[in-house]
Image 1 (cartoon, rainbow, N blue to C red):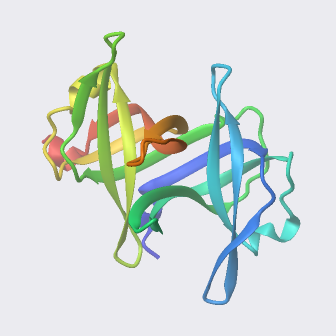
Image 2: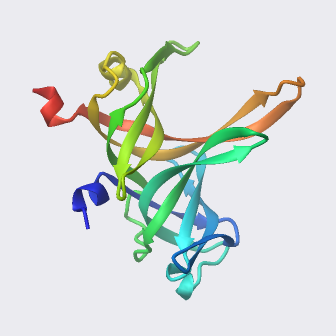
Image 3: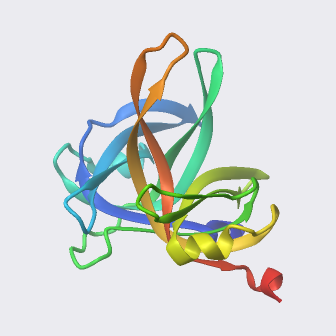
Length: 208
């Protein structure tokens, strides 16, 4: 087991189960199920975070309305919808620790590589934002592609980092509702998932 690859993507969320787990797929004879967790923010808002969990971890049962803690990795996969590939994110659960109300309800630490040029912009309220896409290595020569968003001084710090830079990120997983105008002119409500960055640093080797 490559512990570096295990530790370069670690997420823990605490919240309320909002959906009955439904069967997703089977791998090596083990079934996996999907559901979602409502996680509170410091404000009055909440994030609704999808998660994938194995039938073994579900053995003790996860019921709608239950408050749980889930630990694992934020993973991405491509789903073909209407002939187009769409990047989807899910928390792949590795462990269900005992619930602790004193724990930070939403935290993620990742180490990855900037794989697209950062997009820096200013909001109408003059708030600085920088969008990043990080490639995070996983076992078996796979990678997860995780959208991240930096604010303020973090946005200024990372906006000119070259593609290929290795970075360490601490933040939280957030969901964001938005509207997409389709080719026929209709408007569709959608949800985007991303890592909201609290702290970002160049990896020590790159910083030297």
